[in-house]
Length: 190
Image (cartoon, rainbow, N blue to C red; front, side, top):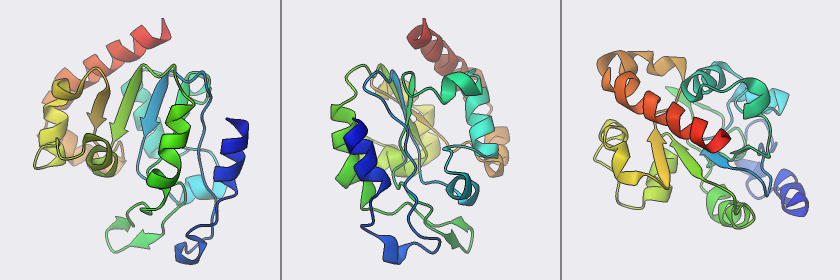
């Protein structure tokens, strides 16, 4: 696993398409029990090299009912985005994750993590990749039907503060999905 992580962190496959250069962000261990597959690092994460080191990460940890020490312990949580590097800024937020990373690295990582009990698919890119045609027509529909993907996967919206409006329009997320998420996380941690 350490050799694989070194290879990922030195990856330069799409460096010419990255406005701030390559800085692959990943955290994993053969002992990881929860895999969190997100989109791509944001600018703050790129600059600090710490996954989910922003407001989205704070929200995600609240959703999980997990403190930072547990969240950042790779023997408990693997953090692997669909695109390992910051893709740059678009007109309405960050650009989509680079498409090279997941096919190149995810299978190798997951093959070395045999203790995973829960995989969270955060955002539509992770859901489309892992649920392969079984998603709903929208992210909302996929997340609302989260029970269909358990026990292997639990789809979530992106925890960005920009999604507070989405959460307000979809109160079932806080009433149904988050309690299930917290309960499943508790079970894994116990």
